[in-house]
Amino acid sequence: MKFRIAAVQFRINRNSIEKNLKKMEGFLKNASGKADVIVFPECFLTGGLSMEECLKNADSKGRLRKAFQNLALKYNIDIVAGSIIEEKNQEFFNACYYVESSGKLLGRYKKINLWLSERGKLSPGSQACVFNTKFGRAGLALCWDLMFPELFLKMRKKGVEIVYCPSLWFSGKKFPAHKRHNQNAAYEYVNSLCKARALENNFILVYANAVGKVNLSDGSQDECIGRTQIIAPIRMVLGKLGDKEEMLIEEIDTEILKEAEKAYGLGLNFKDKN
Image (tube, rainbow, N blue to C red; front, side, top):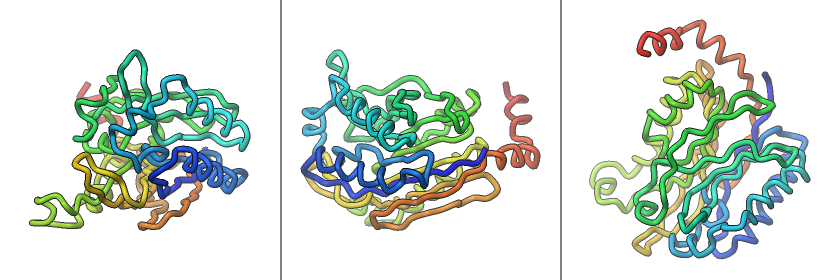
């Protein structure tokens, strides 16, 4: 199946959820009629805030989810709404939604593999999220999940064809190990992991990262590295951005997955191990 995906490399406004919502709508307006699915980065509404401020602004009544549903309907486009901090029964989760162009919520994923600053403040999810869309079987992951192949293997076993991975990956140039050994480590991690997860599981990966400053748990700041990209087996990098705010639009054809399976027979190897 052929369809078009827009991956937004979003520069987060550090002071206002409402300004970020307004910017989101600008990208939706631009993508409407040009793409079938649009993907935003992790925490793209609140990523400029400290974790404590994010928790204070947690969505406990579904206001932001309803806003995403209304926007999907208004602009007739499926939305992977990055992620928001969601509160339920006094627990906080980093949650990602997939909203169909009809406004229907098709997928909701709670981040399983939490980053350092999220641990102890957010609760991890426990379930891989795979669901049917008009464009095939889709799955959701978030940022640091990329480091853990077992999540993606679970999605493969559920028949996933395309995985959407919103991210808030920053440079880490202030980390002592990065300073000592390789200040470009973050870029190499992202590029390597995106390819590895897509190729080892034979699915298409859409990775949407932010750009601009983010606040760290120690009160300092860092820069998100961008490198938004779409990876497909055999064809490899369908499109990739640098470190500027912009939107990547690419046509996807899921038939490449059948061709890759025929060429490499990954499914046979997985069956042998089960």
